[in-house]
Length: 214
Image (cartoon, rainbow, N blue to C red; front, side, top):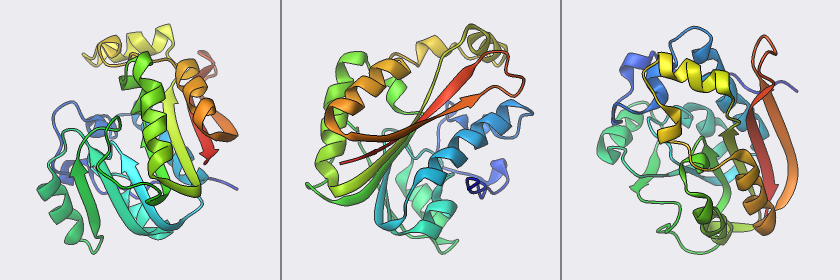
């Protein structure tokens, strides 16, 4: 079964994020397609249900798709302008419960959500923080709940391409996909891992999507 297509508005319409948000890359050729593909693969793994928490929701680019699968959308983000983003989606008949905060200390009670989604978030944590992150994720999940995450697999060519975009990716990515995988498997049960390869198959695997249950 093919993953769903990402339902996006024109990039210029999104609000409430800082200049580092990757929404600015989505309209670029090649790289924009890869950014959309990673989200689409994550969305395709989600089972749907009552409630989902997206950690690091940024501009809310997933919210139109999540609205199709879940009755309640919650979000936690370090820097997003909550008021602007909630108002933006309220005006489009999508109601959300968004907060500022960290995956390491989440402001939610135990067993709160049917699913937790993290797209390109965990690599920004230090390796020693991965265990705490997954303990918190497990804590807020309902029994049998689902975790879907996406993380990049760093390649030298990828680092070079980001430098062309005036972004030093190594100033932002601290944990590898292997460190994240190990931390996840200590707390959760693995369902499967999906890989994304570059379009020309020159670099090999460049992105991983993990699907786990509590």
